[in-house]
Image 1 (cartoon, one colour):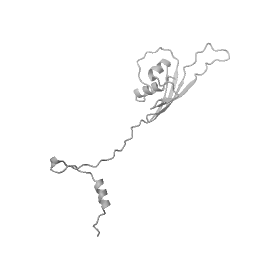
Image 2 (cartoon, one colour):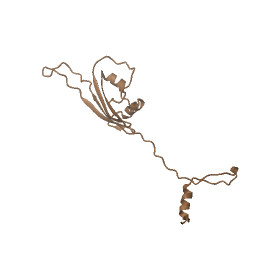
Image 3 (tube, helix red, strand yellow):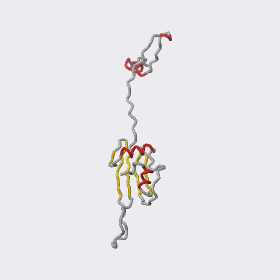
Image 4 (cartoon, helix red, strand yellow):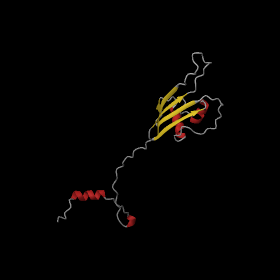
Length: 158
């Protein structure tokens, strides 16, 4: 049996083993530890936020219906895309909408103590997508635009 260990193997084992430092206070000579290279750690990333937001209503103000048309026209739907981290998309107030979502930890609707007029002019909203990696599916009808703005902040302000 060959008990001869190549010098390269000994050097590799020596470099891989943790160095033990002793000091003169311990009675031995001080041994310097080999420097370990710094491994860069990746910066923490925030999962993406992309929401498709739709507002339908309120109904357009109309005058008395004409004999040809007995029903008021349907309210038009408006849709935008909101990206956060960084804020963007075609939402006109993306920075404020992302800040509102961050403040509410991703909740689209939240409590409000704002007093709104009791005028029924319904507004329907929908939010679909992802907020910081969590799926979002939200739909609700509010009594009027004041109630919508008070409960959702800038999220549906477009």
